[in-house]
Image (cartoon, rainbow, N blue to C red; front, top):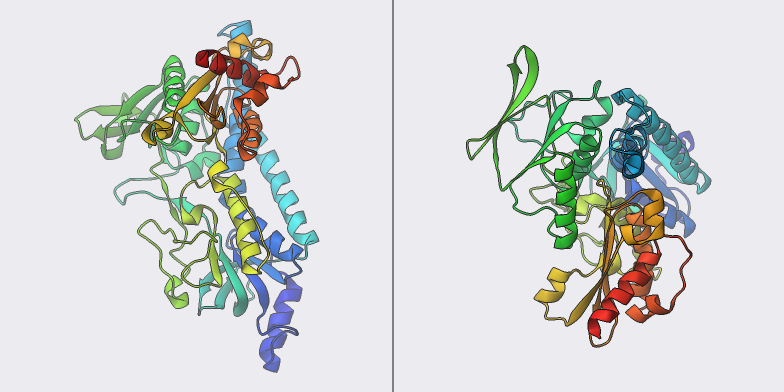
Length: 488
């Protein structure tokens, strides 16, 4: 809900023909969007003593991350792992489950609980930092002027800001000929509104989101067909890790149609039941109960009237920025998914913080090349630093060390027989170059490697360090010995 005190301040300034004291602007910083990037930008500005407001066009704060994206999908993943008994199947057998008949309601119950709590936590953070939250749709009316269309019936107002941060995130995209209905043919934004769990599903698009949902449905026993026009999955991830993921997916009976382009998606009836027919350019057809359309996302900039601020977006609604996250207007910044790759909540948070610091001349540092990537497939993947393909391309002399969860006591305890950790290091200097992990806890475990990379440490750090036993962290020591032994 819009902050009454802020609206009163704006009204008073307009009525008296004056501006708020100590500034020629209504706000020192106005942030458009309350997702991870917008939250961090606003909080950082508030910590610097700046008058800050966040504009959110949704009914609740948190953006896509909390309401339809990261938080719901990762919570659904945990519900899937728990209810399906996936983590215990290696120990208790393939037939083991916590609940034999799992419904969408079972999965969504947990998601609803986490979403409510995340919204509450975020609201409290903004409130205690004195940040005004304006529930409105924003559009530029000038280089430093934003027109707000309030949802609470209080009309339209124009506000000014010394600095503006665009953190509006993205929205799902679909070709005009895709008959989306939210149930039979739907996008990732619709998952929380599904009424029943299908017996079969086709996932069109094998990006991060498509892969995450494909592996979740497969773990629940749904027959999954994954379709993508690219020959390789996630080309920015180490190929050996991806090959291992593909193997695990096939073990879960996932059918992969890579290098295939979709010509048409249409609802149909098969044997009296509602189905979806997907026709591929090669002539193949896929008949399935439901279809998840996951062909990327576009920046949510269509309604911002960027031209009024002297800005423009590319064909995917994305805004170009420099290394400081400034747009072509030095006082307007853009952060998060709206600027494109890597479009991760973690990187978006850091971009927001850095942008706010840059806006007010506060020195801030961030090592973008050491941002970790976490991909919550089943099994999950996390990588940091450089991979084998990049090192080979650049002619770097490197060696590899590997450790498998099945060789680690903790791996046996938790029942993960398929996990692996892989590290790359320079053969001559022994400096660590990159880490890639597939398996339980990968996105947590990766930060050990990230810390060593940040301090330019060597493989010998892992050889000499004592890790708690039994833990998955021991994989680092095992992988280090494996790599060093290769040198000798």
